[in-house]
Length: 164
Image (cartoon, rainbow, N blue to C red):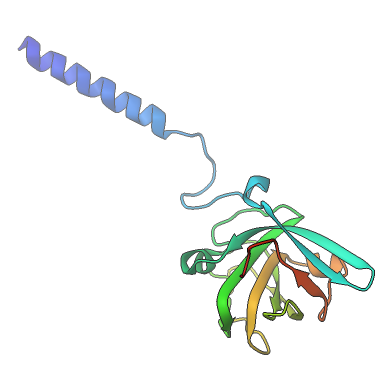
């Protein structure tokens, strides 16, 4: 009988510890996250004659990363975004499923020329397409390109080793 009580008490202690360790006091829904500056370690440069604008980005160059994008992210720093990289030119579309942040997207050729900018609405499943094949796409908070005077025909300079 004493053995049964010791076993029961041990089980209660283990369950209590497991519950305490699992409670992170998070107010965010499961599967969501808030983007942090640490995630945006690479820097892009958008340039044209006498104009240079930088943006900190997270690089999404694997199929799983490109598919995930900014889904379930609750906020994005003002000076940050995601650089999507394909191994070759693509005509892939984008959508905003499970994405609550209003975004703008720029499509960029393999040569680094920005060919299109479009705004995307949160949670929309409408497909967003580039007018022609592209190799890179950049997602930022909606309005970032306009606010920073980044335009079609600007040139994107990639971080060393990205897209090579």
